[in-house]
Amino acid sequence: MRRTKKVMRVAAGLIAGALIVAACGGNDSADDTVVDTTAAPEEVTAVSYPTSLDDCANVAYDYVKPATTGGMKVTYDLNPAAVWDDGSPITFADFKATWEAALNTPGSISTSGYDQVTAVEAGTSDKQVVVTLKSVYAPWRGLFGGIMKAASVKNTMDVSADFADNIPFSGRPYKIKSWSSDQIVFVPNDKYWGTDKAVTKKFVMVPKADQDTEIASVKAGEVDFIFPQFFAGIEAAVAQDNITSDISYGGNYEGFYFQQKCGPFADPNFRAAFSMSIDREALFAQIYIPLGGKELLQCGPMVPGPYCNGDEFANSYDPAGAEAILTENGWTKGADGFWADASGKVPDIRWIINTGNVRRESTQAYLIPLLIAAGFNVRADNCDAACYFQQRLPAMDYDMAMYISTAPPDPAYVTGGFACDLIPTEANGNIGQNSQGWCNTEATDLLYAADADTDVVTRADKVKQVMVLMAQDHMMLPLMQFPNSGFWRTDKVGGPITGDLSNYSAFRNFHLWTDVDGDGQIVLGAEQWPECLNPFTECANSSWMVWTTAFPVMPGAYETTNDGRYVATNLLAGEAKVELTS
Image 1 (cartoon, rainbow, N blue to C red):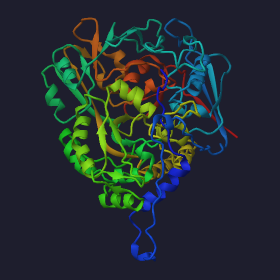
Image 2 (spheres, helix red, strand yellow):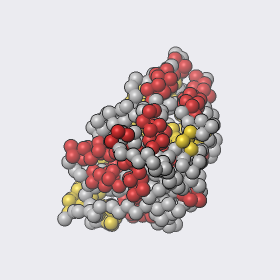
Image 3 (cartoon, one colour):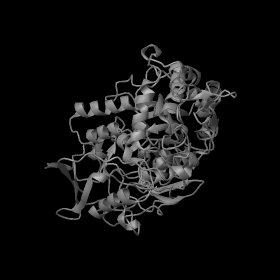
Image 4 (tube, helix red, strand yellow):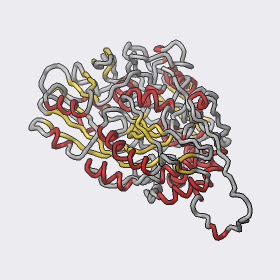
């Protein structure tokens, strides 16, 4: 599946210049200005920003990455026993194919890091992989976390038309027997070489229409395990003598995002004023405290930890400052109460969420009337989860969005998600995962510098500076760190169920779960269901897509753990060898 709609963003120079005005707006004093009272009032010229999808398709950015210095070579010795589910060996060719697909497939969201690789070659044998990079890349363990079988596609340079309804290979304990809109069935991979072989002869995942249905299904015994979004009272809602649970924190966080490539929020003044008009503390009290929320998230697109100070977005609510920014830049309120620009145009703000998510629907019901009262013409423009996460978000077909991100332990994801050159455009083949269209050249330089910094302290400092720039640019508003919640029937399923529930890859260890009731299968009720399975394109923008398909079958060199580390997998014979080059 390719992106069917493309959204544009204003040039980086225009955003940077305008943001200075937004940051300073409302702080200048009239007493410091000498005014000629005989002259006519100065008119503010209307600034035109791209607003349509057609306009958006033409937006390009002139950002150029800083020159790289040094380089590195990573050598992976593969487990001699490692084979695909057809018995063919996993070799350097599969690593090379993965690199080529990630880097060259039109619409790839996985180019970050792979764009530093210049060669993937066989070493002393085809079971030794030598990866050469043109720069030092600190988060190298995040590369090749999911390996594609080279022989599964005709053209490794473009896999955009592959994997529509199946991932037809496996290098892990289970393999996919079938996938449909109704269910996915896993069966043991009888060629799997590891000691952690699949315990149960069949594992089934089925979609559930909404959270109420999901909870009812586990209580009724229709499914054995569910992984719902947490809310206060969920434990009581699921309570039953034969159901137990695990609630734990990982890398999940929810936020508001403002699409800046085109549309109303391409205007940095309007975006700043809109963001400053949202009272997050009142929203938190209304929506999140009843859900069990403890603290308003202030970092940005990140959970609290070593890469943020924790106060970057504090004091973001400033309605008086918002009004000052708009009036000083030629905006006026019309008879209808809405802000209009100097040309008289009232922006139409489309706020998208996934239908059926009660928390987000409640947030819209609470906040939209308040924003309308503040002069912003906001409306709900929602669609189902597959449409939302796999189509409209990657296509940037929205103005405001609200969603939970699941982040891996290393902050390299910030580069992939927010660098200027990873905004999908016609010019770059629509690659990248920067679906907010935020382009701050200083921040992007810092992100690439952080990726090349092997010093833990100075690298963290660079990422912290980016969080500050995000707040200054009003590119998003963080809301809450979300816990993971798993519920399962002890009379139907057992084993190390809690082993990966805080993990970035969620319940990836389900091959070790046991069939307690002896019915020959374990059934998982899925809160969302993907419509496409391509692990390189916008299909992989959905966490439920990778949790239910890619993670369970694609082997990797390194994987994340429940406590937020990267460890070598059994695909490798041992730790990779890293050599810095000049």
